[in-house]
Amino acid sequence: MAKTLEERGVDALEKISESLQTIEDVVLEFDVPAWSERLEWYMNEYYNLLKAKIVGSSNRPPRKNEKADIEASDNNPVSE
Image 1 (cartoon, rainbow, N blue to C red):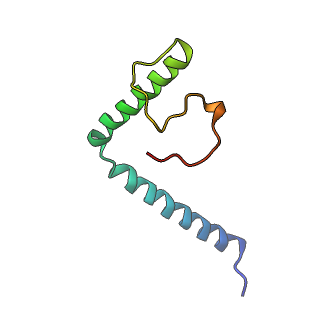
Image 2 (cartoon, one colour):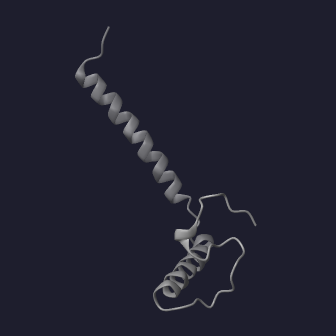
Image 3 (cartoon, rainbow, N blue to C red):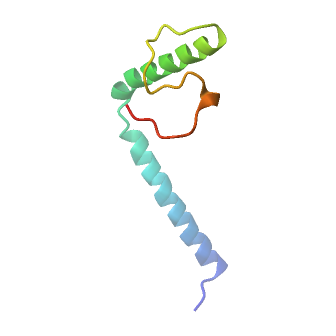
């Protein structure tokens, strides 16, 4: 027999609550001290790259897997 609209609504709300519980578990298990240093490094690298594009050259040594100009990219996978 087909479910009523109310039963379908209850099932949907139960699935949503299970999803939210999973998200909450991930957030509570997040290791902030371990990730804060890594995030700081990535944000600094991003800042240096943007600053180099706007102001001039970066103080970073060039890496062989970075393109000099993004527009010249051929979209091939890059390997080190």
